[in-house]
Structures are given as structure tokens and as C-alpha cells.
Image (cartoon, rainbow, N blue to C red; front, side, top):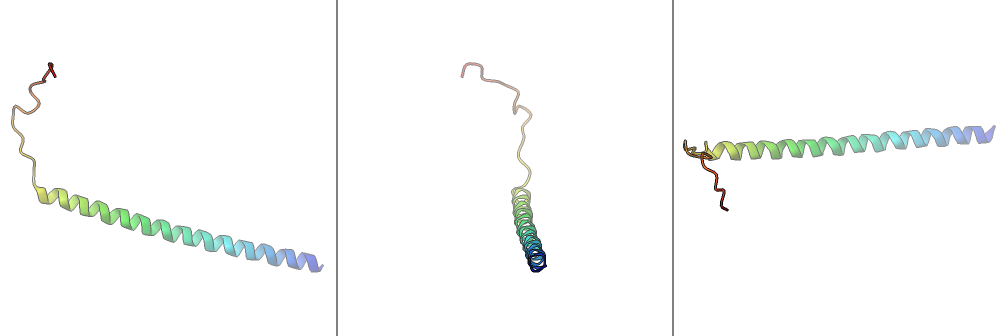
Length: 67
């Protein structure tokens, strides 16, 4: 009977450790996603700050086939 109690206690400890590891992994993932979201927002702001690109009607109209 002593081994049953010990094995149940060991299993409970393992399950608690797994839950903690999963919680830590989720927290790290959320932090990484927040960093990515902030980086994307900064890039979008930088693109908006540069303004629209100047496009001429002849842009892309000719292809240099001798190059």
C-alpha cells in the first residue's frame, strides 16, 4: 500500500510540473506574439510615414530585352 501512495504522489507531482511547464510555454508564446504585433505596427507606421510612391504612367511599360 505504501508504494501505491508513493506512486500516486509522484504522478500528481509530475502532472503539476507539466501544468507549470505548459503555463510557462504559453506565457512565453504570448510575449513573443506581443513583440511581433508591436514590430508589425512599427513597420506599418514607418510605411505610412513615407507617403505614397510616385508612379509615372511609363513605369513598367518597357522591358530591356538586351540586358
